[in-house]
Length: 120
Image 1 (cartoon, rainbow, N blue to C red):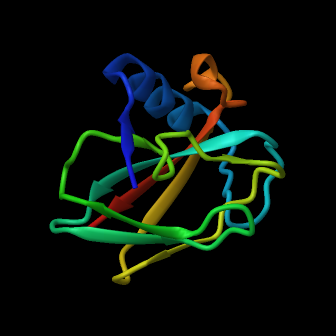
Image 2 (cartoon, one colour; image 1 turned 30 degrees about the vertical axis):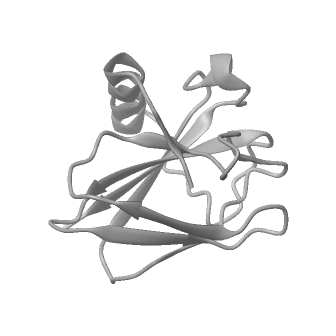
């Protein structure tokens, strides 16, 4: 699976949104159809994410503090969620935060992006 880099400015905007927006969660089904998924691993070690999704499923590996990336398939196509719901499994129990940014990656065919931040 290929990971596509996200600009630091876009990530900064997402962090600002996280500080000012109402809490949201893509695993609870908050509605943002056409959204993408971006992963930031701050768990203190490697992380494996498994995406269980009817259209696309697979496994993605992240190093600790790796630059956040948009999740893409093996053909380098960015994966979007038709209903805004993302079902992810992590290989370890760590705190996770979800933030939605309606502008992030909109130039790459996303209707905004969910940022999944995994912490220690």
